Image (cartoon, rainbow, N blue to C red):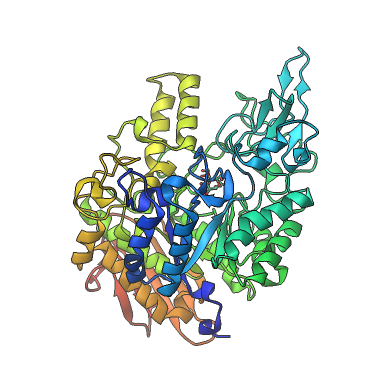
Length: 573
Ligand code: TEU
């Protein structure tokens, strides 16, 4: 089968939208659905095929909408269900597909299901969440059922005074985990969270935390790594549990009824054999997943922010990327390509350089060229197409709004105190890796608040570079990152067989400055070589064979004579 016979989602580039920060239509400082609708022509002009809208459901926003209180309603500041109907229609009439975020590992504590579940131990919905009695230590102190640490710090269990039991929450206490073992719960999830929107015509889902629904059956303690804390990293105890594949086959059956696609978020699963169980077509579970191999580079091993900026080597990057690309060599599996989303800091800051406008422009184009040349479905996060970078290091920590950032900062502050070296290290880590950087308002033009809102204030501060880095300016500048992205997306379509569906092979492995790889089409003789200088210095050409190939595109006008210039990137075909 050639790639043009592939389903749409294999050939697609998907543009991710974070509703709060995309475009505000009514001046309240928060992005909204009419704002998204107003920019559909811009989105179309990028050359993308679909949008993924982050949670727009009703929610008290403890975790920016990943805490849903009603799957069948829209968060009022974002708009109404009617606006969603209009958005779906606005996309489809332009030939753009639309996928939603499916958050079904947990709900908000304000969801009616949880309200009923916590109302009494004999509630018919008691078993819809994960409740356990307390344990008591030798001194008689009440303790949670196990030592699991939540993803946002602290115990993963919250004590409920009313019914005198603990409930499990892998994220915020305001995000209680659903009990997937109960078939009634699963049926309710499928109906309310999935079919309600599938009937409205959405084309698929990005599925949040897709491997956490089945936990360790005995909820055993995790091994103690952090001897200073009661709570321990427990990902091996709540990811990829024994019933995962049964549940996902059910999810798949629902999607199949509507011919809808799925992309699952698959954290903490670097082993390709495990990944294949989720994405092999014959397993009938997910179409593809987001692997964390690349985006987790440089994170602390035990705690994400317990690290220093750029603590990764190019070889780590190469290995991680090769692992995710390797999925494509299995004929019935598929993969994804991405460097950014709403949980990641900006890729230019992390993997390129934002030190000068010139380096920023070159490295932004280098990353665009690389991503557009990799196999799988390509995902671009809002702002990435204009080369957005992290908030400046001069910003006060109070500008960071995300629960993950503030919980960790407060934890380190309580543990080590103001002015401590540990707290300074934490600030540096947040400046480099916090999720907040992706959540700054989209920069549309050079007016106040970068055209994101006409209101007095925006919910997060606009990045300082808005006057130089915005959609309007980059549309006018042929040399912009935005123009380069459009060009790369056109070439990606033209050379689909090779760039979207080809086999990937790293070249000159071990080179710590230059990342080179080869792509080979599966059904033709075509071959491409991609060469990327990942440093801000001149580098020697790597030892790779480009005999018989012609330069297709690069981020400098002509090939340099002897060496590769800073962040130079070239594709030969
Ligand atoms: O993220 C899930 C997740 O597994 C975490 O690793 C996540 O990457 C987090 O950012 C840790 O740094 C998803 C969503 O993408 C995220 O926005 C939500 O906060 C989370 O689920 C809870 O729903």
